[in-house]
Image (cartoon, rainbow, N blue to C red; front, side):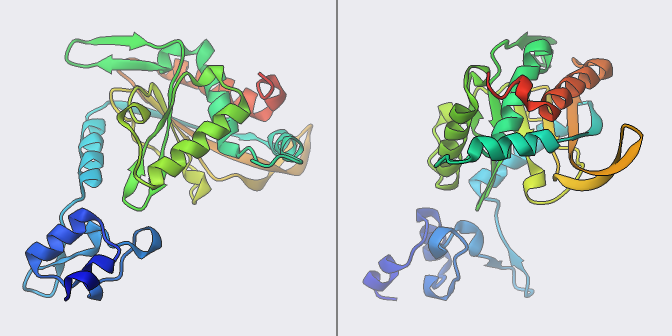
Length: 276
């Protein structure tokens, strides 16, 4: 392929190098990155038996390493759900006329930061080699973001000091930087608690994996309608499924349940925290 034509093809530098080393014609590859950009994962290697084999990307290797460490944690999970009719109503009211709408995830982050004030042990960093931990009274909450290359977890620092609008602005900024692969080290380090909002894609309950050296992660499921009993009467309601996973070396089940109950109270009565 002429050099000028090759240069006009959208591809990452790593993909170009692999293609050059392997004799792969980039013009024959359909890229899966933003704007059709060719990524490393789009370049399968021929194993000689008709099967494609690919190496893990740098990001996927980092994810794999973190998950292997997470698997060594003696984790315990608590699942529950709460009614969020008031939350949905308040969000509609607050977003009326706003140019940048406040997403549900911003409410989840704010409620988490508020609940962690009463249960700061969940905002801890654990050092297994020394059997030591440090608790952060000002939580910095990481949020799992899906990108073309895999999940990354940018961190909103000192979350409890931000308003809902401030959280939304920071969340939008970090999400855009994550998906364009421009996050700095400071933007992915220092998290003390993580939220995985898998319900925005699908799923009701799950067991998200703790991101060490943190000691807890909150999984947020898909909001859906179901029949519930209200004042002795069966009625439809919007419910939010929740999954809290904790490091049982530091966090007892009762403490985890109390935190989850506190979060559920806040998110079901958002006036308790939404204006803070």
